Structures are given as structure tokens and as C-alpha cells.
Length: 320
Image (tube, rainbow, N blue to C red; front, side, top):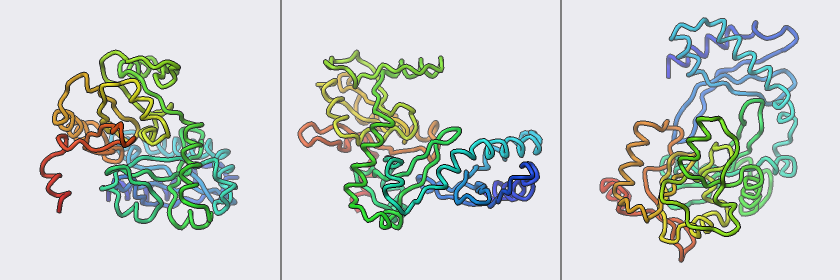
């Protein structure tokens, strides 16, 4: 972290000359607490007259510099990204964040780990889903990807809107902008390899039929923070209609979930070990959702943890 901080200080001190002379840019090194208590060092760029601008995180650029990439190229790339995001940033900067009517169409929901984010959750509206938590975000389209702001109690208080209404609006908007998608794992991998855009969404079937045995991925269309699709009204009920013998849910990451039909006869203990192994070796700390396995309780209409999938050490600690 100290190396990244020093690198960020160096960039902030020298990057101003890489912007056109008519662009009065203010640069400030910031440290942001992200999901799962991960801290990231970045630079906040704000142009004179705008109250918001992009934050560019420095770790990838520090690694590139350590690998021999010239600093002049790195500075050029960062400045170019900031300049090309100006139109969207300007539009977003003109919003009145204290006015609910101005920002309600940007509301969305994100699913995170409840245990690892307890301190952050104490400062924001959220809904508990077993050991997971659903939070509110303002999501803005940018030149590349999206920008987001987590909704805390202070911001929500300014809106003077009931928390239940906020979540209803956020889920409604999320469903419109990023509908839930259920696909076979093979189809997802095929689309990634071919950079394809078409999706064979099993949730769209008018007459649900039991799919072929295999692994399935539940996410949203963009596959970005798509695990929140689990909270969309009616989604789990639709999945349940497809897998009449029942199914397990593996929290692959905050971006997607794996749906495992019980007909595959993989034990919850094996599935739990699989989730923990993948988290250790393949999923960045910031993107991890949980190390538990869940199943859909048809009678209750909600998910629950599968005790057999949890490490006994975790069970004992949770009981204290």
C-alpha cells in the first residue's frame, strides 16, 4: 500500500502538464474503502466548475511502471481516460444529489457479504439476506464502464423517502437496466471466448422445461455486480420451476452466482470446499461474496445456508 501511495503522489504531482492548457484539472490522492474492507489508493480528478469526476486507481499502473512501462505513457493514458470521461462526468456532476427526483433513476442494488462489511453496513440502509446484505448504489454510465456511489444514511436522510420505497425503486430500476440472466456455464464461457453478446436466457422461457444436467450461471446482463439478481422479485421462483428437484446456490463472486441442480448429487460439503478453494485462488478479495453454500427454501420463498457446507470452525465462531 505504501508503494502505491508513493506512486500515486508522483503521478498527482506530475500529471497536470499532460492535460490541455485550457483544462484546469485538480488532482488529489485518495484512499477508498471498498467491499470486504479492501483499501485502494487512487487519484480524484475534478475539473474546475464540476463537483464530481473520476477516481483512477493506481495499483495497475504502479505494476505497469515496475514492469518497465515508461511513466510518460502511463501519464498519457490516465489523462486521456479522464478527458474522454468528461461528458458523462459533467452530466453527473450537474445532478442535485440531495433531491430524490433528480437521482432516483440511477438507484440500483448490490449484494455483498454481511459479516465482512459490518462496519460499512452500520452506516448505510441495507437488507439482510442470510449472512449476505443488499445495499443501495447510485450507478452512472461512464465513457467506459460505470461509476457508482454507495448510499449511506446521511444521503438517504436528505431524500426523506421511506427505506422500503428506496429498495423498491432500486430493484425496479435494476430489473429494467440489468435484467436477471440464467445460462448454462458452457454458454457463458462460449460467449466470453467469442466476445458474443447474445444470451440464451432460461428465465425468458414461456413454458419452463427442466434444463439439461450441468452448472448454471445466474447474473445480470452485463455480468457486473450481477449477484444482486438473486434479490429480484420472482427470480428464485422461476429458477425453482426449472429445477423441481431443488438446487444449490454457490456465491461465485459479487458479479455472479452458480446454480447447481441437486440432481447432480454433489454433496454440500464438497460444494463448500469448492467455494472456499475458488475464493482463495481465483477471486480477488474485493469481489468475494461468501464462502457458504445456499439452497432455496420453497415453502419460505427464500434462500438459507446449508449447514453441511460450512466449516465447523465457522459454525463454532457464529454460535459464540
